[in-house]
Image 1 (cartoon, rainbow, N blue to C red):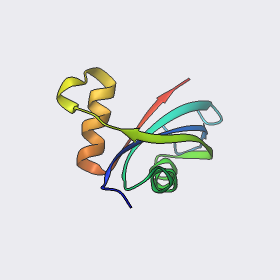
Image 2 (tube, rainbow, N blue to C red; image 1 turned 120 degrees about the vertical axis):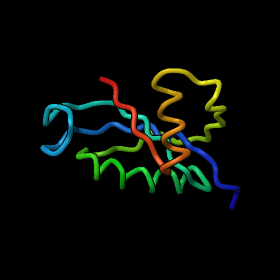
Image 3 (spheres, rainbow, N blue to C red; image 1 turned 45 degrees about the vertical axis):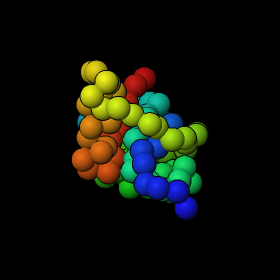
Length: 94
């Protein structure tokens, strides 16, 4: 097992009734998770997606993310800092 770090998990999912996006809208999501491996990050990504109202999640890929949060701007920087502080972050795009 490696040292805990941040991993980027690419996911296709559908917005459910409890999601902030219109129900039924399919989107590509990036989930940044704290984990010890890509496999652990893939498994861990499902919990925040479910809590945020996403359904039919299909994990596409996962890999390590070696961020320097101070060097990242905008959405990527905000999401990386959120993941470092809270264990995960979700970025949605159509």
